[in-house]
Length: 513
Ligand code: NAP
Image (cartoon, rainbow, N blue to C red):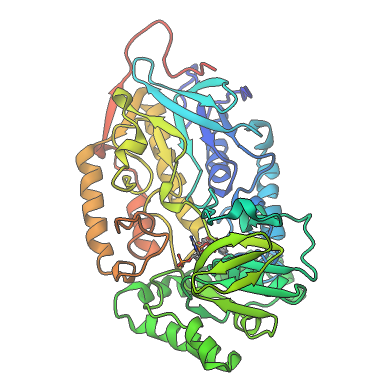
């Protein structure tokens, strides 16, 4: 294991005491942010366990054509690491991946990362106040704190299509794009029409012979105010960092306002619908196709999508939209529920992620061997998205009810890291064995959250990855991000059980791997 040297920060660690060993899961945006703040606080005794061979998480995985972020890059970046020369307002995947690689290198995180190392299970050993962590290859390590940066969108969901085993062509998920397949002149079937599909379909449509889009539900798609930054703008951002900061704040406030669209019967929501309908009308002439592409649920219920080329792609003569559903697959064709056969050489799944599974399939066991999957049987929930009662010294970033439909998830991650850092500081400063959020604090938080979320459009009936099959909204934050920031600015340790260390010869917060 990569045992990083321990340095001591005067503000955190008393002379002579060792900092606790910290295991971070994942080297995506959240894991990197956590690690950077630990380093800044003088805590170097952490290791990041990353299942893949490089950093950047979702921005490493989603390499499909047209992959990019629908949150402007000046905001979709760490507040402490501005990048003045973003090439365009909404950067594409290679630039975003490069940004996170840059962060990992600049802050000296690479020696802390164990690549190609996937955590399979973690169990809390109360006696020793340690997390015993086992990797998929059987290796075991232990750490005083276990912090997950796994997020909500890391496990691709591929539906099982009846008869798929008879299909001899290539079939892959958008988050595992097969770049060896040349789609030129091929007949392509795309399953799904969500945030990923609306980015890659317009990119591949011009080169394929025919693209059949199997759409289950249309989405509200509004224009994307994207453009390259000019050389002058980039130079000004570099010369006057305050200007870049102001630009970031303006983006933040504009996006923050968009939360109003998520309230039931919202006027703002209607504005989005109007903008989307206008797009459909200006690009799609066929009334039947217009109907197929127009949602029958309020805007915001599912993620509002941004694109300037989705409807033009849908209007192409070599693109058809099928809404009857897929009955089964045969070699060389997908058969619709209406009995129609659709020839296909390649199937691409744009079917999203197992978003409500959260940390599954990992097995995480807290006090008394209680399983997190069991605790979350009725749907995941946490205290402020970061802690779960009965799972001491375990924290999450981008955990339950911290997803957004309107603003930057990086902002939320920074709020969470700030909060977790305060817990880590308390643990070290008070020389505690562990902190564990109290059940009543967690329950009060979630009762209020679920009450607030009832006022949102997500609760208005449509299905989305924001909720479980039973309808519990487990993914989204219920309000403005400012409210989250306010709640997360100070960790109230009174809401945590603070277990004192048992006096023993070997301090139980020592690294033991
Ligand atoms: P998604 O938005 O959840 O879309 C999945 C699509 O697959 C939906 O159209 C869904 O239909 C369809 N689908 C799922 N199961 C199906 C089945 N069994 N049969 C037929 N169709 C099925 O997934 P995604 O496009 O990968 O995006 C997921 C999330 O990733 C986004 O909401 C966003 O948060 C993030 N993302 C962000 C960006 C960005 O620019 N920041 C880009 C891409 C993705 P239904 O709607 O009927 O369920």
